[in-house]
Each structure stands twice: as structure tokens, then as C-alpha cells.
Image (cartoon, rainbow, N blue to C red; front, side, top):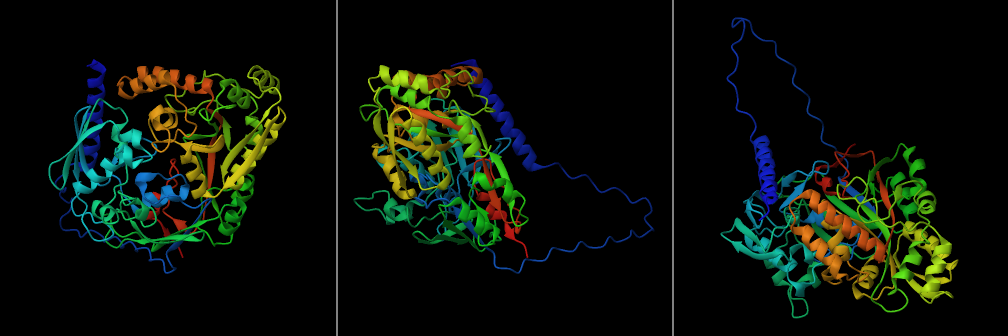
Length: 543
């Protein structure tokens, strides 16, 4: 074993001890004797408690597309799905946006005696929305589904390293890994589902019960699912017996509104309280509106054009993919589509992340070089291609620019605009020649690399929708996953970034800043850097 592994472990345990100490607080000191025992101290006036708001506590959230699946085991895909997951379900752990310090949720305690062993103690008395108590059976069932290749869970690669889940009793279990896995602690953020509820709805065609739970999720979270009226709204309501206390909001209602301008107008007129994303062209105008609070956050991710490498000619030729990459006017897209809300992207890991590699091949906008590459590949006269995009006004505009630019070098692109569910179904088929999509990662560089590019992550086992398969790349990130020395991990991820950029299965366009629109009446709500609305559990609408 490398000595650095134990250095890492010592640092981690030190952090855990520090967090525990902060939670325990300091011992109380005995009260000081009054200077003059005969003199009565003046009574301070009692603070007035804030009045409870009297208006209906119903928050409307405008999102660009409808969810695809509401069972968190099988992926999110859309902002609505991701945020419904986080409001209806709880994970074992979470973490602070800025410091990345671990925050316990369903787990009361986690011990790591060695880098391949994670001992978890659950909170007692946590209830699912149907009144059943959460136990280790539910945690074991959730993670066994996630690591079962037959289940085709979207994050399968994250949980494949689990060798065994050992259940000790109703509140204690241990995860045993095949090998050290640096990001695994953060993998304990998976939302937990009910074993009995899933099994109750299992069928021969749906052995994990997801045909039902994708439309009727059940969790332990602050809000419970009520109904989904397709094309109209998804209704959640406060869970009275939530273990952290009932939320102040009575309902959170998600409304799919593909047109960004319509979402902004409805926010301004009070019909929405949250707008998933303000159309970049409207950000400055909206910031001047006293009826809206605009919150800008740089996202830890990228927007890209995916190109399938395994569908045969012409996109199986790297020269064709590199030619397409040379036709990406990044600065113009940022200026005219995003109105400055972004910086050019040349690789998957954004600037500011410790694993970012700036010295990757750069496919600057160069039509002449694109024509040369197409000529070399035998496509000097061009070809026809299909480009899939989710129904969203900003993304469609981005694809129209790509379509126009590619036409100048003879590539005739047909744009297929699909609503959310249909788009993600199409991505799982592996039959999309080109597609526009984005990626928001979480903490570790592996989150940018494995699910997007590792050979094992092709659908339905991950997000490698371009079916990129490079054994040399796989070997590098497999080593990086187990490596405990951060400098060596950085070297490995630098190599990996250079490989995926050179192979051009993804053309990286920009790392973007997202502008969320919030009603000024929505109080105690904080916008997460990971674009999560979990903090609605603390929010309320002021009078």
C-alpha cells in the first residue's frame, strides 16, 4: 500500500473529528457572581417574535422541461426531476456548497477504518411518507439496485466498486469496496427509496418497481409527492412528520414552461416564485425589476455538442469530429446566446477546479482547417446529419447557430427538438448522431470523467451517450479513481482530459453562469451552486 493512502486517511479522520467537535460545542462555565448582590438587575425588554405569515404557503416553480423519471435510482436528466428527487427523498449525507464539508442527513455517523470500509449508523425514527420507518433494509436495497447491472441505474459506475453491503441490525451497516475509491464518501449521497414500496409495485416487466415509482415516488424527504398532471404541473406537499420538522411551505408546485421568456414574465407578474433559468437576453432587464431577485451562480459544468463515435460513417472518423469542433464560434455563442453568462470551454473540467487542465488541444474557430479535415476524411462535399436537442428556447437557439456554421463547410444539419421525456428516451437508445447537452458535476474530477467517457458508462449504464470507448483512457481514470495522492491524481486526470478532447466525441462550448429568478417574497431560500432547490425546506412566503 502507498504511504500516501494513510496520509489521506489521517487527514479525513482529522476533518471528521473537527466536525464532531464543532457539533459537541464547549463545556458550560459556572455563572459569574454578581458584583452587587443587593442591586436588582434591570430587565431587558422581551424580543417580539416575528408574526407568522398569513398568505397561502404555496410556491410555484417554473422549469424548462418536464421530468423524465421521478425514481432517483434511474436518473434525473432535467432540473425538475433533480429537484423533485431532492425534496421528496433524503440521502445518507450531503455537503456544504463552498467548503465541501460533509453534512450528515439520514446517516447519524460514518466511520472509515480503512479506505475500503465505510461503516454507517442511521438515524432512528425517520419515517417514509407512508408512515413506515427507514431501516438499513431500505439503504441496502437502494444501493443494491444502483450497483445491479440489470437495473440499468444511471449512476451504475459510481456503485460498481461495492463488493458487499453488510447489514448488522436495523440501524447499522457497512459498505465493503473492492479497492480504495477516492470519491466514494460523496457517493453516499444517493437518495434512499423504500424497499417495501418498490417491491410492492414490482412486476415481471418492472422487477424494481420503477414503472410505478417513476410516476409515484415515495421518500423520507421534507415534501411528499401528491400528483403529476402531465404537461401541466407536479404537486408536492409538506410532510407533517418530517424528521427535521415540518417545512413552512405547504406546497411546492413545478410547472413545465419551455419558453424562457414566458417563465420570466410569469415570475414578474407573481404567477411563479422561482424561475429555473432566466433567458440570458433578459438578465440585465430583469435585474432592474423590483419584482424579481436575480441570483447568478457559476455552474461546475459545461455545455457541449455530443457526437456519436459508434454509429458508422461519417462521425466514426475523428477527423470529421475535429472538423465539427473547429466550427464552434464559442465567443459568439457566449455573446449572442448567453449574453456574457459564460466562458469558453475547451475541456470537461472547468477553470477553478483543482483538476482543470488548461493545456488541452484547442479547436479554435477555423473554417479552413475544418474543410481540410473533411477533405482528408473523404467528405470534401460534406454530408447530412441529425442533431437532437431538448425543448428549451436557449438550447434551440444554440443549435441553430451550430446548424448555420456547419452549413458553411457542407454539413447539412437537421435539428430535432424533443420534449424532456422523449429527449432522454432518445439519448438511451444510442442512435443519436449528434446531440446538444450539458453536464453539472459535483465534487471529484471523476464526476466529470467516468460517467461521460468510460466505456462501461454507455447507456443504459451511464451518460456516455456518444458511445466513446478508449481502453487507454479507461485505464488512466481507473488508476486515478484508486490513487490517494492528489498530485498524482491531477497528473492522471490531465492525461485523461487531453485524450477526450483530442478524440472529440464531445465538443465543449462553454462553462456557463446560470441566472435564477426568485420572487422577493420568497424568504430564507439559498440557491445552491449545484442548482438544487433543497433549501425550499427552509423557505416561506412573506406577507
